[in-house]
Length: 112
Length: 110
Image (cartoon, rainbow over all chains, first blue to last red; front, side, top):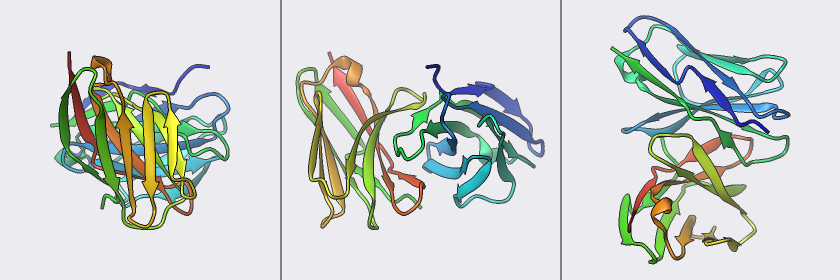
């Protein structure tokens, strides 16, 4: 099976812009979770989608949003970018009833 | 805020030695998992231990869980240079919401 893929791998944006990141889960996985990883805050849970519905949400401002499509692919969007949004954004998928998460390689976002 | 706190933050050992890292958490959990991350890449699942289990083995990995102390430990035996990575514990409680620890950076010297 192909692993979790994320696009793009690297992104440079300017403050105030918005960005959309994409994640394709492992075939058959309906749960997709997003995380933000920074040196200062570590790995922080953003949200989780299951069958096109947001099932869980972390403590991030409304500028961070996501969605999931019928084929389980997911996108996350960050509007009005701030310098502090610079991070590695990781996506993970898991099978139904499983807690084991499979992570993608991440998207490295730099906000200047 | 982070639920899991790992200890030590960094660990440097010689190849062939054992590496032990600890994780503490704050609330009751369904299960606890350990993940490995190589140099800013995605995480790789290593092992899951359920809240009603006390010890689990997988190859060179041994995980213990003490729910009364809200802590877990990961032991890597006979470490190799390829084990150099950051190790994170992750807890789940209630629904499928994961809280990761701060991580332990392990360096295995050849």
